[in-house]
Image (tube, rainbow, N blue to C red; front, top):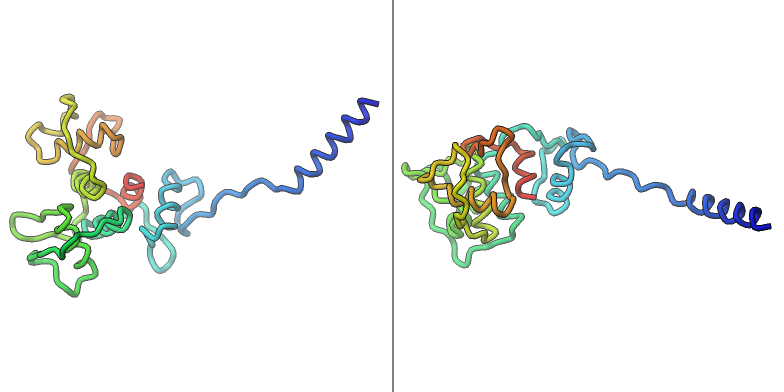
Length: 198
């Protein structure tokens, strides 16, 4: 009968379906990152592309701050940009034996970084949201045009980073916080840095 035939079809379907288990959730890329971590997609993607590596003990330390040198490195690796000529650097705190020397040299040649008035780069200093934004815009050729006059109250009209904040808002690279502030001088954590780069 039709009823028996439908039962056979349903049984066959269920049997076949049972042979294909549900896809398991992607394993966490680091031992200290739970699979439901807010930025798990960013960390998984960047690690698969060798943009980030974590520490020798397989941890990532997501809430730890990221330095200017570290952020410069991941931006250059992620974007794949290379200078046509070697960069001339004379920062007093960057030596040729430092692991970040080549990244600083490339970043300077590409215009990602400028340094400070005292001729330092401050590689170990935490990178701010404004500094990170400039590096990313330069690496990915995002033109820092300023179109929106309604800036957050903590982004002065004469700030060096105002056009970058305008570009970030327009391109949805970075957004303001729930408080309505951009917090340009806030230092990025390692997890937040991975997310905005992703």
